[in-house]
Length: 289
Image 1 (cartoon, rainbow, N blue to C red):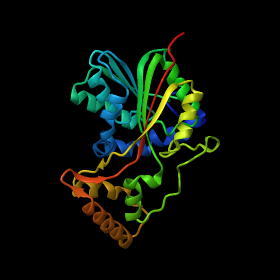
Image 2: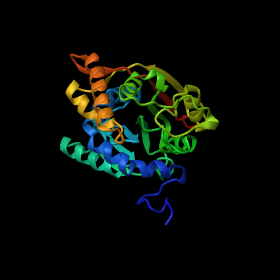
Image 3: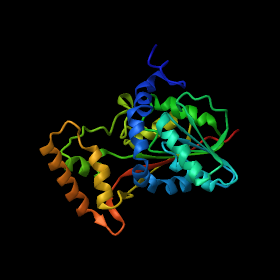
C-alpha cells in the first residue's frame, strides 16, 4: 500500500509528509495541548474575523482549522450563516468537535481533508480564512487555486502567516533558552519553496502565489501582536515539553532553569508575553463579468 493509500481521505502526493505528521504524532501533541496553543494563537482570531469582513449570513471556510478556535469565532460572527473547518489532522478535529459541542455552537462543522485537492463545490463560500494553516501546502499555488474556486465571485480571503524567524522573539528567545538552534527557514524564493511554518515569510512570494491563483486586491500588512503564554507556571509546564527528549538530566535541568529566567523576565500582569511578527494577507476573487 502506498503512502497516499494509507490515509482515510484523499491526499495530494505533495502533502503526504505533512498529512502523516499532522494526522499522527504532531496532531496528537497539538490536540493534547490545545488549550495552550489556542491561548497562544487566539490573539489572531478577532483580527481574521475583522479582516475577512465576516457578516451574519456568510458561509465561511477555515483552512487548517486545527482544534477549531478560529472556526468557532467565525461561526460566532456568522450567526445566520455557517462555518466549515478543514484540517489534515484527525486528532485535532476530534478536539475541535468536542470543543464546539461543549460551547453549543451549532452552525459549524468540521471535515478532514486536503485543501489542495478537496472537491469543494464551486462558489460555495463567501470568505475563507486561515490562522497559520497555509504555510504547509506542498503546492501552494494549486492549493490557493482550489480554495479560490470554492469562493463566490468577489469572495474574500484573509490569512495570517509568520514573518522571518529572526523577527519572532517568541521562537528565537525560547530556542536560545532551550539551547537549540534553528536554520533560517524564511525568505524562500518561489523556486525554493519548502512547506513549513516560515515558508510564506517572503511577502513577495506570498503575493505572487495568490496572483498565480487569480486573486486580486492583494494586501500584505505587518502585524506585531504579542503572544500570551499564561502564567509563568503554566508557560513553564507547557514549554518544557519542547525540550529535546535526548538531553541528559543535567542538560535538561539547565534548559529548564534558562527557560524559567526567560519567562520571569517577560512576565506581566497579563501573563508571560513574547513578541511576534506576522503578515496579515487579504485578497479577493474577481467579480463575475
